[in-house]
Amino acid sequence: MGGPAAGLWLAEERSALDALPWLEPFCEVRVEKDESLEFHVRRPSAFGLGGLAQPSPGAFHLGAESLEDYEERGFPGLDRPPAAELALLAHSSGRDNHMLLGHLALLLAERFDALIDFGGLLGYRSSLHEVSDEEEAVRLAEARNLVSSLPGQVWEMPYATVGGGCWYSHIGDRAFLSAWLKHPDFRMIK
Image (cartoon, rainbow, N blue to C red; front, side, top):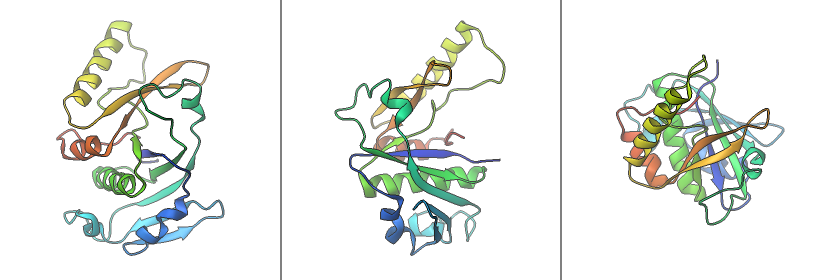
């Protein structure tokens, strides 16, 4: 079963290889044929996570991702659309992997001057079963209240879904992710 993920919306074209010199001092890194990176964090303490298991519990992937689903709807609220996206994925779940992924996303966003795509709505309680319009409105309001209570900037970005529908993902700046990492309900989206 896969773990959480985050996207890095870049102002200029970048490759996962641009992160290699930064990751190598504290990660075991393997470069894939498509120039994506598979890596394992050896020392989470290198970026302030001394309370996690040493070495860390999980493996991660960093590679190019398409913005196609967002391009169809535009990028409302952004001064300019992102030039590219890098996807950061944890191969397994669990609290430590959510925390590692969040901190890796923050550090890479700082390095690349990127916005963070959370891959869905933070605080939105999804259901395997269909919910009424009223229940969905309540869940959306809860998610919106959560993100509006945190510092930083966040956008509710529309994207095209399978079948021609539309849904939303929270896109945040670094100040927002930094605050979210300290929130008691923190978790990244799977």
